[in-house]
Length: 121
Image 1 (spheres, rainbow, N blue to C red):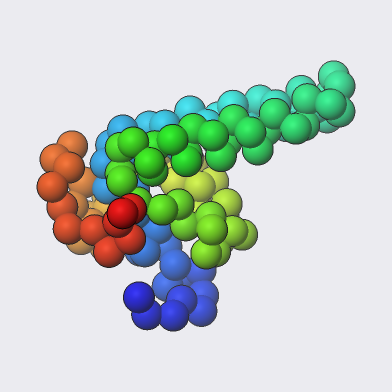
Image 2: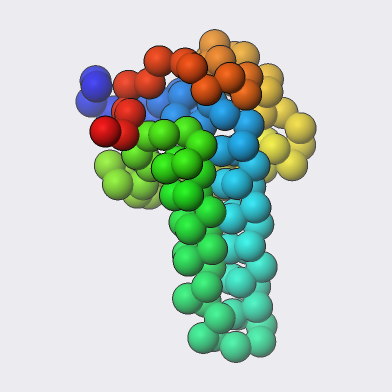
């Protein structure tokens, strides 16, 4: 894999690692829960803050292992990955993620037979 030096270079890589609709859906759910627990932790009880990353990363990592069959980008680019999760969540809320996938020519069908660079053993 080519070295990635900027978020602009990372974003197409991130999209490529999230081709499957189910992967993106599980990320959306996890990110949504993380926002809920961040809010509750700030407003109600700070101990709830621990649930934000547990839910956010839990749903995401499960989707990579069981759906996408690749390693999460969190392990190689943790901050860009978090930023990309939020960007994908935002684009999904606006209904624009399919356009972004097309823009970078990322196959985005539910077919699980695409070649993968970051495949799990």
